[in-house]
Image: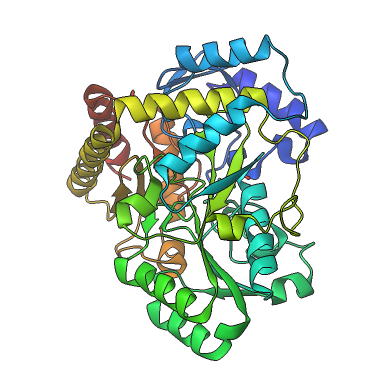
Length: 428
Ligand SMILES: *Cc1c(COP(=O)(O)O)cnc(C)c1O
């Protein structure tokens, strides 16, 4: 008898009415086997499934819930906003406040547009880059994921990789043809592509710290080269910080790394758990968007009152409490504990981490790009995943997704996680 009969039953029902029973493939557990667990509620660092089990959550809605689930102040802000109506299709003060918080955190951003998802943010930023430069080509990196934008669904990491469809059917050859895919962290490849096609490139889009092939930080040399070459050839550098913004530092990866992109895309944390995205940059570029400029971009629910209330409250708490040194220390504690646990179990692995994000790669080689990531032992990951689940630790259901920590992942909870990992890794 399964430990999750109610989840099993719900999954059967869901599959009848939704493709694969899920509204986003990352949730389908396809890479680890079995069926997804249906969640009844979240509270602080914990998730509760419909069969009554509690888990320490290292997924956190794939990043947004940095303050933990059901944070009382965030909930109160949503309730208060909802009592005044949920959408007007007209400007509100909260949109200005959220924009001001983002601009204050990111010195590279003078003006910002709010949208409804990370996908919308990246597709809008690309359109703007093309409209601004009058060029067509985009450079992206294998294993980086920027949402399900047609032109970016080429060698797109996690969900795509997990499902074994690096390029999606339905993306036309014409669309894919304007996308140049290079290996991540490959400085020579970047130099070569600019030498041969530099005048045609509208933008380079990159996850400065990749999180969608597992956590793989971009090297300082690689990112510096991107900054120099885009500037030299008049292309825009787009940092996709949908995952890393307000997570690895308040001002995102660009604060941590000391590099200023031309455009930045945001999402996840800035919505405090509600659907949101944003893209921003210097006024001289952003003012090419309608109604000032000619590049079209719009949204019925963009900047809606509930998302802005949750986002503003989340960012204010992060700004006031500065949890980043603590997040960095806890992530390091977890990384070191996992490495030790794997060493005593004689399981070869690599632990990659930045503040608030971590991946245990089952590989003998360091993971620096999609090729080395793809060499991981995903069967071993699947076994580890279920052994952790049985011990009440909820991990991302793919080798190629990063674990996230919330501010409520205490020293003691991390110790418990390491103890669980020691048991899970033994004999793996
Ligand atoms: C999650 C993510 C996206 C897509 O955001 P959605 O809100 O899921 O559309 C884009 N880029 C990166 C780096 C992400 O992690």
